[in-house]
Image 1 (cartoon, rainbow, N blue to C red):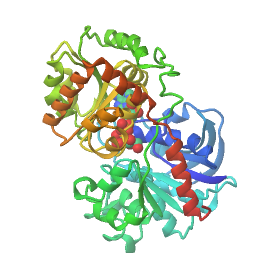
Image 2 (image 1 turned 90 degrees about the horizontal axis):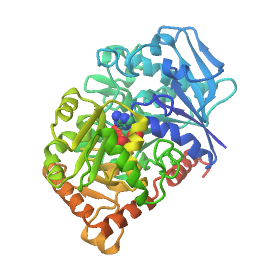
Image 3 (image 1 turned 60 degrees about the horizontal axis):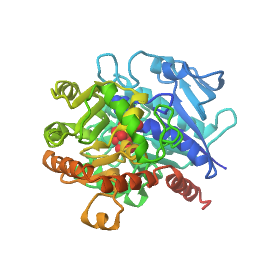
Length: 473
Ligand SMILES: Nc1ncnc2c1ncn2[C@@H]1O[C@H](COP(=O)(O)OP(=O)(O)O[C@H]2O[C@H](CO)[C@@H](O)[C@H](O)[C@H]2O)[C@@H](O)[C@H]1O
């Protein structure tokens, strides 16, 4: 068995703000079948500590970035966890990244540098006799791990997975010493980023291998349009960068077994869920497609384009039910969209997201960029046709309805490009046409449900990558 340490700031089902948590939560079980035993190092937020049973203390610190800390080992929700219990850093009300004022906690650089330091210590010296063969780091919050390993001369290989390059873990240069950065690394070929230091860049420069969550996003990241200032670094590391698609956890996201819905095996079984969904959102019966959005409401997700494109859907009797939260202006714009066929719930609600995806005819994902995207994968599994922008993982996971795919009878959804309101409008019109053609609709729904969206392939790819890094392939 390869022993791997996964380092992450969120992990489902214990703590989640987005897709990173789903991936970090699902990978260990998926890798188990491929000869990898994975432990997950996660901050001991109050919400996490409140959900677990008896723990064992496996490491203690008198002073970790300004306070006493310990690492607790515990098994919970099928995960083998190492929790960094550092009350001065993690025991606070509010979200895991933001204070009550909605702004980043001022000490986020130190909070996650502490997590990284502990990961590097476990790689170097072990915790209660356990030592990983490699460390798998997720996003900027784990970005300092590869740097600390190199700084301390620890040979354990590291992988950094980029789930979203928009978050770069910037800190003022003045914090360099406190974060444990060496003076000779504070330059543009090291951890410096336009006068700041960047945890993500440190990971990109120092990790032995980089992955991102789809092959198309891996290519996009090396272009100025998508690299968000880090495309040059990524181009330099082209040989060490690969794209491995995310999967979804089929034990919770499958219409046959989903605990939150009226279970079904074929698209016909969606009818009862559709009715329940209309009732729940107070939407009338209608002869157009019932579309859903389940999303963080941010610039990335392109939902401002949907606001502009909605008339194309509504004029054909289509409907929208939206669940999301984030940008206040977008929240208001959707809440105030005054139309009987538009219903909006602002908030975060996991069970409701299942009921929406089960009951809808289509799921809309008009993202400006999308490293992989999970909700279109849920849509496929439930025969809920994805209407997606042609970018990143959305390009890699949907077989678009085109003349050629119609002839071959293989389409699973709709794609639009360029990523504009106009192109989205025309995709929504095409969706209404497909919806009116019962035979075509049913074929596409069945194709979608048969499309593989689990972890098998990706877990095998990660396991092969681990073996390659360890020289055991
Ligand atoms: N209001 C709400 N209520 C309930 N559930 C909600 C919700 N809003 C969002 N979710 C859930 O949160 C998750 C979002 O995952 P995504 O992959 O779609 O995007 P995200 O941008 O967070 O993830 C980033 O990381 C992931 C993982 O690698 C990449 O797939 C993605 O492209 C990248 O941007 C899904 O499970 C979704 O159902």
